[in-house]
Length: 372
Ligand SMILES: Cc1cc2nc3c(=O)[nH]c(=O)nc-3n(C[C@H](O)[C@H](O)[C@H](O)COP(=O)(O)O)c2cc1C
Image 1 (cartoon, helix red, strand yellow):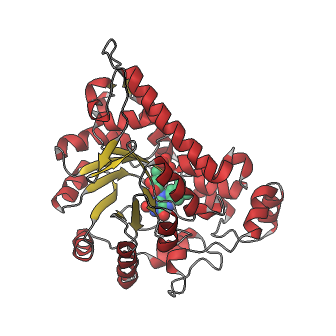
Image 2 (cartoon, rainbow, N blue to C red):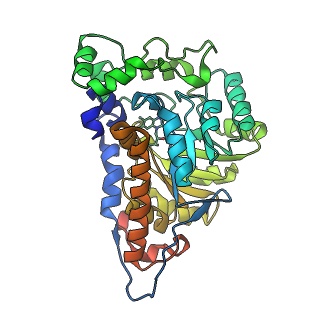
Image 3 (cartoon, rainbow, N blue to C red):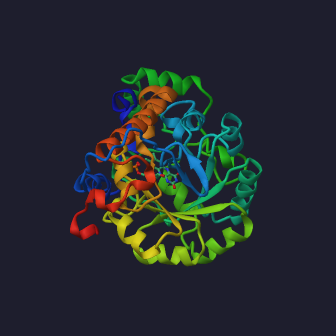
């Protein structure tokens, strides 16, 4: 439905990945490659999908991933997603490149909010955003470490796709055949990088390609020292997102982060990076319980959440799934996707013969040898 409703340039920005999209495909293929070993006759009458992460409860083990420029899918953008997440009892991560500000998102949600940070070259800007997130009662910072430069997303490169879309003959044509989206895009206030409006770093008022923006504004020399710096300026939890090897997971544990998100940015950064799910079991074995593990990338069904948790993750994280819902039907679309995830997970657990999230373990999985 999102593909039908959104202009193709916008849909491809959401749907696409880097280069040959091998890692994008691998994320989902990894879930397909893991089978279940369901148990029967276990007398499970009731299924409880509730769980905890970072010491607090969540309705079921799923976190909404940060996605920049969410208003491109629907004018309500981050506000719609934050409201839907709060209704569903799930944490929502606002992106640094959000199109609604830290404070606006808090004003519509009394739920759990996390804030994702990129390393701007101007660290004062990062510090300022961190202070704002603390004042607005965000509980965790998610430092994304896989974006030294922007991956080459060739669907966007071919189109010259910019944020916001520049108006030219091709976009006019694309817009004309998607009148619902175009009407709401034109009728609503312009889309901006809401967290940096007026900060002199470009707020998206004039069209810019994401590659140019990130490659000029973000610091490619991010290092473990920056994780220590973050610890010194932030009292809440720290989640390191973009960990892609067992070695780095161990370093992250040594650095004292509270959780790591095994993630290749949904296949949007380095093509050829490993599927997130394939890392869960080896990383869980190497870490032995702490920090907590989040499996991010390729999650499309509640049964995928069951697989990630059974392999050793505390929770799964999903980006495109809710963006498709948002693009298809706005806030109600996000509600629907989150309902599906919950119902799917409960059904999968019932059919697996498991009553609680804590009972999901590796004995229930048929994992390919390469990922054990
Ligand atoms: C349209 C889009 C925008 C994204 N923007 C960000 C971002 O601003 N910061 C970030 O850390 N990750 C970003 N991501 C990556 C997501 O947080 C997440 O890692 C990815 O979507 C997971 O894969 P999935 O889409 O298969 O669930 C973005 C992903 C998409 C699809």
